[in-house]
Image (cartoon, rainbow, N blue to C red; front, side):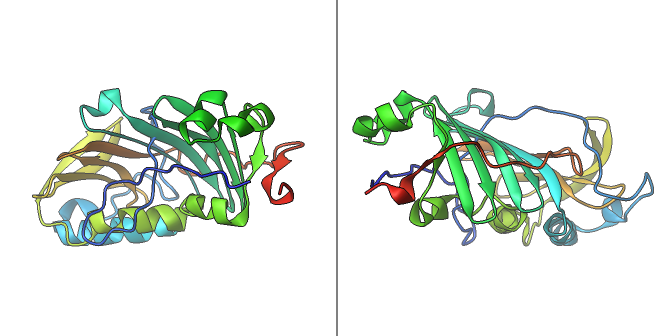
Amino acid sequence: MGMRQTVRPWPARRGLVAAVTLLGAAAMFLVGCGGGAEGNGLASAPAAEIGGRTLDSFRAVDNVRVTARLSSGSVENADTSWDLRIAGQTTSGTFTISGHKIEVIKIEADTYIRAGVGYYAEIGESDAADLLADRWVRLTERQADQYRFLTVDGIALSIEGYLTNLDGAVSKTTLDGRDAVRVEDRDGVTLYAATTGDPVPLRIDLVGQENGRLEFLEYGAAAVATAPADPVDLAGIG
């Protein structure tokens, strides 16, 4: 079955690898990945150093919730959005694309999705909807490749272009009750990063032709995903 997957990327910038289909966010108290309330030196660093250290710290993370939304209008009325919980080699969460909710579970090389009739109609697979709609579906290797970014390394690659060579104004602030530094880049990117504990990213805002927000939440608290029971295995369908 040649089911096509439609994944809209996070906007490209500075050679950024297209990565993510975006989905809704919930602002929650952010817990640092290790370390206490002691300052990490980020508050006094220049913009370029803040971007590099933040990216390096995120790459070392093993457990985090990441949410995002993207819109040609305001981010409060997102066209696409996502909400992912990454724990070790597992990822679980949801996407919303053109109003269609898609659940996803990724465990190492295996990727499963569950979506409704409307999603399959949207991607031109109405004939398959009777079999696949509202059921967990294990994707083929080719189809699963489009979800390869659903890891810490994949998301780090997708945000690298935003955090490399930041050159805007730096200011101290707080975000959801946590001490942070704010870097406002001249190209419409604003980074918020933690100034206590590990210098991890807390939020990235985009302003331009498309408006977006990527949030990093619940460091160290995301649940480990388990494989769904009795999925439809597309590799076994001719």
